[in-house]
Amino acid sequence: MLVSVQDITAGYGSVTVIKNISLEVDRGEWVAVIGGNGAGKSTLFRVISGLVRPRSGKIYFEGRELTALPPHEIVNKGIIQVPEGRMLFPKMNVIDNLLLGGRNRRARNNVNESLKKVYDLFPILEKRASQEAGTLSGGEQQMLATARGLMALPRVLLLDEPSLGLAPLMVREIFNSLQILNKEGMTILMVEQNVVVSLKNAERAYVLENGEIVMSGSSKDLINDDRTKQAYLGI
Amino acid sequence: MDITIIAQALIQGLMLGAIYGLIGLGITMVYAITGLLNFAHGDFMAIAMYLCLALFTHFNMDPYLSSLIAVPALFVLGLLVYHFLFRRVLKAELLMVVQLTLGMVFIIESSLLLTFTADYESVPNILHAVRFSLGPLSVSGSYLATFLVGGGAGAALYWVLQKTDLGRQIRAISQNKDAATLMGINTTRIQMIVFALAIALLGLSGSLTTSILTMEPYMGLELTLFAFIVFVMGGVGNFLGTLVAGYLLGIADAMGSLFIGGHLGAMVPYGLFVLLLLFRPQGILGAK
Image (tube, rainbow over all chains, first blue to last red; front, side, top):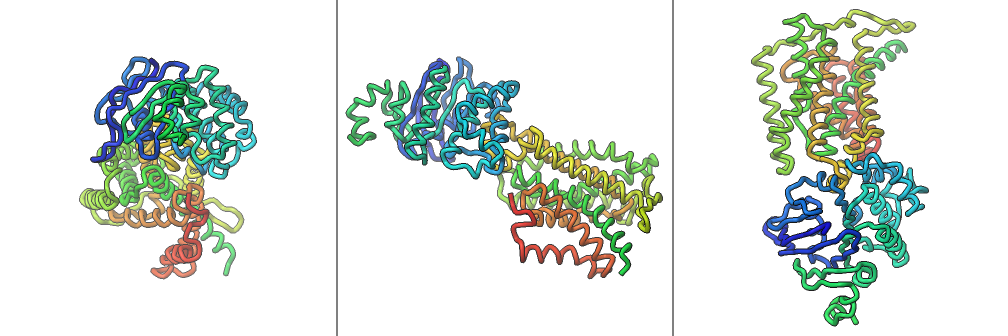
């Protein structure tokens, strides 16, 4: 297993947000964690990236424990998060945002090739190179956030709500690019509210409800499961 | 009014402005990446000036030579103050930070008073008596050196902030600290370096001005006040604005003391600040 989350409990102050979460991601897989607002999806990602320390439980990457590392060392290992709401550097231009993405220890010697690669994947970013990130459209910002993540040469890409706030056409464009990346071997762990898009793209999924995993399985099985249909697909 | 006198005042203003800009840039950088203000900021410049005084009295060392000691010494002092004091209040309430740094003001000022007495002091440097003539203008060498070195340091630092990886890291932390962490930036380390760098700049400002500014143990708080004015005038968190505001304040200061003089003249920079707050509260170049 590339990523193994074991029995993680975490929260803020006296509030527990996620309880006893375990999940695994294999090399080259695309795995989704689906659930509504407040289910604890972003907290799970903040714990994996080291921004929030778990109360209990452990996270392993290639069999080595991550849980005690500071966040920048977790990035240096190749665990790269594209955070919810994109979290771009709004007053910096597109290039500076991308360069910051590519400055971790593993990625910094590869910056020029990475730039070429993300421009191939998202040509609009090359046109916008000297524009401030805050002035881009929502779709372009999501592309920049994804590209900034790719600049870091991820060994696993954590995507937090890549479809949030985007028009359906833009969602399709982003996911087409992600499909290309995944076919080339990129491991993706994604949290999403959009169940249809998630189950159409990911191979496997976990369903998160009130901070706990209530269901998991292959996307095919989940899409045909009566409980998923009722609760999330509305059919 | 004689044009040469105005030109003389302008030159003095630019010299003061370069120093105000450096002091203000330190405040702006620290605020940008920690969100905190250090009320003892100016007192570290007083420490640097008294360090130059001590080196001059005991070893007859020229203040320009002393800067080679003062700058690294203040950098190390900055690292220590950050590590043992400032870092601990990063997540505390704002009033805690005010209390801590005001406490540092009293400790530093009282220590200077006990060590050096309350006498007004200044230390001449090698260029102090040298005068450069430019047509009808005559400029003291130490003024010129302060303008060139201080202004050059401000410009160099601005270049570092805009064009280098360190600068990008600093700007990233100031715009979104969590996102900066997710880029693999060791934010704790950068915060410590920037705090120490801001204090080291005061080591430079202090060494440059020992013959120009009169030192006394309580000078720090007034310097801090000027630094805060520059910080707000430039547009909070705006690096270029801070440098520009430094020059404006320096020129206002010099013009005020030349044309009005006395206490009323000393009010001119504050008057400029009040006018700016009334008509352009977002600062000269706007907040970042």
